[in-house]
Length: 249
Image (tube, rainbow, N blue to C red; front, top):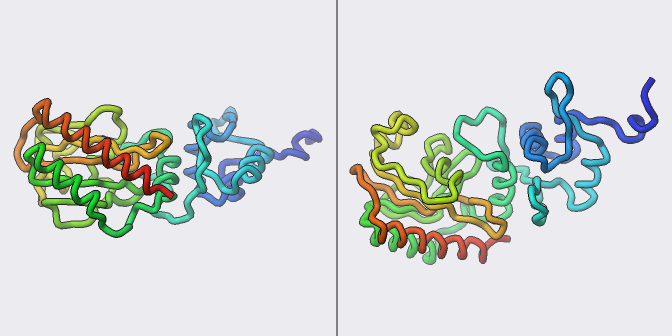
């Protein structure tokens, strides 16, 4: 016989919770695993939560992205561009859904080119002696370049993005020779134009510390950055992050 508590506060599956919140089931799974949505596992390994938990989230701010440490909750995106489907092959952090929600809210993706970011990539290329420099933003599907120098395409598939690895780091991420690195040697950007061999990227963060993308430099020859070049790249990344934070919706 069903208890009165269960009748008044039903147990929800991840799919049912996703329908209430208006997001993908894979997104709710991520939020539950990260603790953003209080939940528990059944003996079969499936996540469950209470209807009151989801309703409380809706009452506070409508459909939400998860918050891991009490920051302001962000409206969950509805554009598939910013929703995980559950079959992604690129590396991602546990709070990827939250990061994507913040990126969607920023309004930066597909925004017009701006001289302030163009100036940063020109300086990054100059201080590191690199032919290519980019300000990249990572959606669930694309790596889109807010600013670029030395590269023609405006975007690449997310699966090709070296920056997916860079945003997982607290420190600069460097690949000295992509052709000998098992993570990248079969990457289309290594095998064909722009024939990446060297990559260095620094995460660009919003006010909550979430990485929206990177400032990165690329070369067609194996190399490493000298300490002064690396410091210059990090300083420019700090400036770019400040610009992101000032523009965020």
